[in-house]
Image (cartoon, rainbow, N blue to C red; front, side):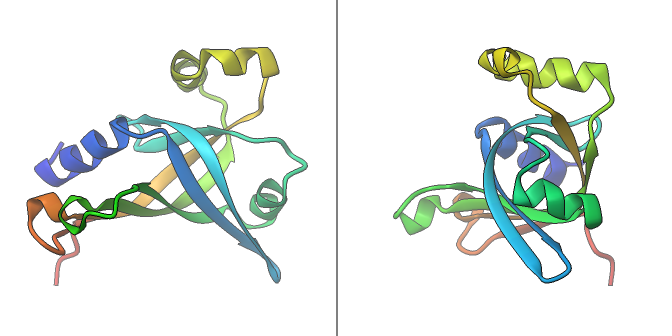
Length: 141
């Protein structure tokens, strides 16, 4: 794994809530979801029910975008991650175990799990220098 991707994974491992944006037709939705992140699959695992607006959107359009942020007022501590990918119903039993290991209380709810496969990350981390951005995959010009 390259160094930039390691920094991204390290950031994601310290957090557990994302904002996820979806769209279909003229319907837009944004929601907050608990996540587990699998670095081998470069995927978020989330739980959500079929009757939500965001899941109804992804059944028509699986392309999603989202963010994970460190909430702070200190400019020098600003960290945040934007991502794009696509979402689908989770089939992989190992990834299901990963989610329930992180959120064992969710087992009682028997939620439907979804996998967000990442295609793009953009991370801002002012601890690396003001306005420092990491783009993955790195774009070649």
